[in-house]
Amino acid sequence: MYQINFGRPAAVHFIGIGGISMSGLASVLLKEGFTVTGSDSVRSDLTDKLTAQGAVIAYPQAAENIPDRCDVVVYTAAIHPDNPEFKEAQRREIPMLTRAQLLGQVMANYRIPVAVAGTHGKTTTTSMLSQMALHADMDPTISVGGILPAIGGNFRVGGPDLFITEACEYTNSFLSFFPKVSIILNIDADHLDFFKDIDDIRRSFRKFAMLLPEDGCLVIGSKIPRPEEITDGIKCRVITAGAEDGDYRAENIEMRKDGTTSFDLVCPDGKAPVRVNLSVPGLHNVDNALAAIAAADVVGIPRQSGLEGLASFTGTDRRFQYKGTVNGFRIIDDYAHHPTEVKATLDAARAQAEGEVWCVFQPHTYTRTQALLPEFARALSAADHVVLADIYAAREVNTIGISSADLCECIRSLGAHAEYFPDFESIEAYLLEHVRENDLLITMGAGNVYRIGEELLSK
Image 1: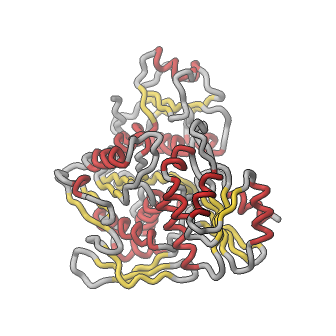
Image 2: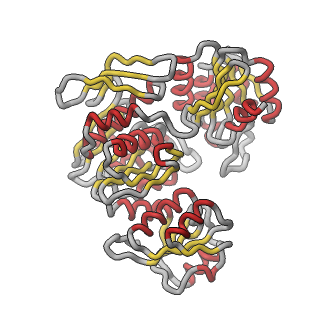
Image 3: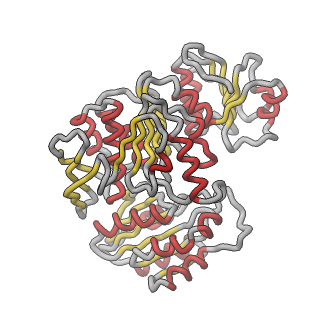
């Protein structure tokens, strides 16, 4: 496999350079003196920014866009073998890397690369750790799977020492990484369109943990069942983090109606507990914060400035994001699309709701909905009222005959209130008629369900 080396800048061509992650990686290489070319279907603010930094970008994609001097071609999962530039790179036998492989190659050039993995909480924990490093003036390079207000996007190009990235298990992409410090927050059944079952997923996380060098460190969630199956034989240091029983744990947890949280931090160093303040709600965010604090200690972020940075973190887009108030009820939006995430988010909503909790849920992918139907029904039943939108197909075609109507029936069988509407307009009309003052409405899912809240606010 081609190896990116900051000490030997090369000529790199990006197919689909305008993607939010691809553009960030291109910015890193430009800063390091690489020659960067690329292509995309249309111009955008991201491609204009890259052009200003020195990249040469062509529109649209065509075989002749790949320059005569090209050492490696990078492409995303959205690029198929019939793409003209993909075919041209193969014809010329130019080395090729996927986006995940390039990210792994890039992070290997930093002194302390940190990878944050887990079925849930990756974006939030990556953002928490990033905010701690930023507040401590450690000039981190950051790659996160959501929009982090502190950096005005999802990618920041920093200094040569600290690289913090989210690490996704889907299609085993995180196995292309080269971390020195890794976090595994949790391991649940998900992405069952790729993985066979939970055991297959656990094997993938085991391989991810084994990537760490002997002088590295693994921070692992204490609630993960049979953690020894993940950690046995690993030669690096292993730290557990979890509110109840981790090496880093929380005592005297206080969750307030305003969505803030505080707790006493207990660490393995034996020092007196310190009070930690969070500006995000929910017990799940206590677990996320503990993992971030443990990793911060490992990479050398000073405790006081790190905790100040953590307290200033108010969340990323679509993670329990306050959208506004209409008719006296608040609207929150959240990306939760797995039963564990749904339950954690609804628990957080319940803790701060003055009235009833309404959840507008848009299931994400047919395979996930079918595989986890009973779990979704139980998790959603924590809301006082559930309103279901059609399943968001994403990358799938409905060949299994599943629908949101099936989930609605399952929720009702548990004695909970649920309604299903096939279009957003009907959902909006129903909500305006039934949601009352002081209630809390949360739009939830990984698709475009957030538009419902935005439409309500525009009325």
